[in-house]
Image (tube, rainbow, N blue to C red; front, side, top):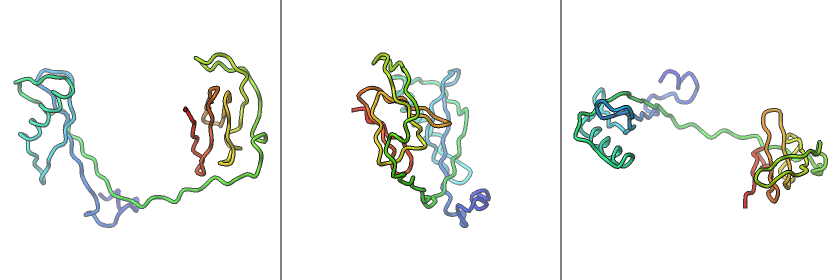
Length: 165
């Protein structure tokens, strides 16, 4: 909990919530099933965990066994609510989409076939622009193909939204 305080997420340990899970399996089996554990202090209700395991195993694998159950792993997740950060909005450039166009090249949009596609600089796009496929949007760390008949827009936070309808 000191990490939460050091990170500035909380000043009060009471703000920290804990979630416990266990990976359980039938003795001698390979695969485990993760189930929530009801923990009270340093103890948990093993009978309830085993009952949850049987139900979860039957949902996943369609059967349950009358065999001993093993706990393979314990998981602890500590969370604390934090304020949502203020996200920076991408400013409008005032430019036409032609300013973001950098090249044209032949691209295979399988299963739509080969098409001449316009290539756009993704960093030059803003929320007033719509890229219509066939196209490719490129940034230093990502490339988005926009298939024929589809369109792409950038939202006000710089997220790419591709229309697939």
